[in-house]
Amino acid sequence: MQHLQNYFPTLVVETLLGRNSPKISRHERKTSTWWSGVPKASPDSIFGIVEAFKKDETPHKINLSVGAYRDDNGKPYVLPSVLKAEEILKSKNLNKEYALAEGLSEFNSLSFDYAFGTCNEVGKKGLNATVQTLSGTGALSLFASFAKKFFPHAKTMYLPKPTWGNHAPVFKNAGLETKDYKYYDFKTFGLDYDGMLEDLCKVPEHSMVLFHACAHNPTGMDPSKEQWEELCELVKQKKLFAFFDMAYQGFATENPDNDAFAVRHFSKNNLKFAVAQSYSKNLGLYGERTGTLTVIADSQEERAKIISQLKTLIRTTYSNPPIHGARIVTEILSNSQLKKEWMAELKGMVQRLVSIRKALRDALVKEGSKHNWDHIVKQVGMFSYTGMKPEQVDKITKEHHIYLTKDGRISIAGVTTKNVEYIACAMHQVTK
Image (cartoon, rainbow, N blue to C red; front, side, top):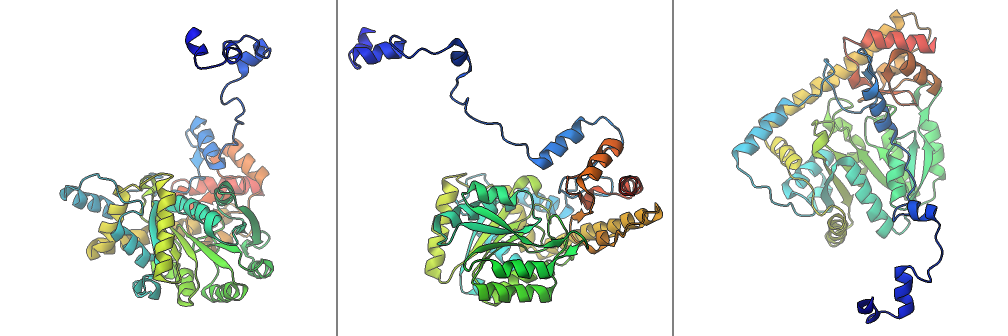
């Protein structure tokens, strides 16, 4: 007490020790903590489904919610080319030192070429500000923070309706608003291209608009090349800033060059835009968190400024990106034989998805369903927007132990030749 009085007035000391302090009830003393004002967050919808699936003790339960590739036995698939790359890396006896904030330079360069093409003028002129990120989500988050801080018109990001469930939360978390533009026709189960154009024409000039570069999640419906060309012209005329989320390059058409058409066409037309890139799906590097963010600059001087600010944002959040996944990608993209093997494996994964789509559609027809399920075959990528309504989703989960998202989206990768007939039967039962 005497020691404290040397530093604090008596009244303050008495207050600190409880004398003359405001009366606090016993209940308040018990319940008031440093973090008592923290509200409980809403659970992530996908993670919630996964938890419910894990708790289900039914032997024949099926999880069609998670966006990760599975083989025809329903097991995670590690690509042989990835295993070979890891063996090569092991033989090099590399250290585990920190990467620079912007990541591995060779990885960034090879990734840019994979997305934009090796003959791209942007790359030749050195106008691409490319940094390594924590996969696609990390690239989205990094760009959102960068745009909020430096984009002169950064107020709203326009998103397709529907879109990946994490898009809006990522941009809102950075302090941006999000608004929708039409994308999918819920009556025809196809792309609502006219509605898309109508809405984008109403978007204020200098706004930011997000596009899925290929294999749209969750609908599996992409614009055609001709439609991308029209969209490019609209973006140019409206002076919009395009942001491409390219999480599935190679997963839509088997051909990574075809899947990158929109990105390369916008680049060819000298538009300034940004791209989030991920290797989670096409290389199966889900847990390695490997991706990039590229922002196209007007000059090398501007590029240097952009890179410097991206590095600062990285430094003040996670400091450095992980190196193992980036080294795997670098090894594969820089080794012609290994890259050839990877392309064959990627093609095999896509072909399995295409064949299982047809098998599911055919099994539904065989069940006697009166609905037209052709949209399952027309859609591309890892997902199918089945058209099942929330009450039907609840029923198929409760009665048949098949887990999927409330909007009726299923992961085609979770369907196998062994369970396709059971899934078709259950879908028929809840939709007839």
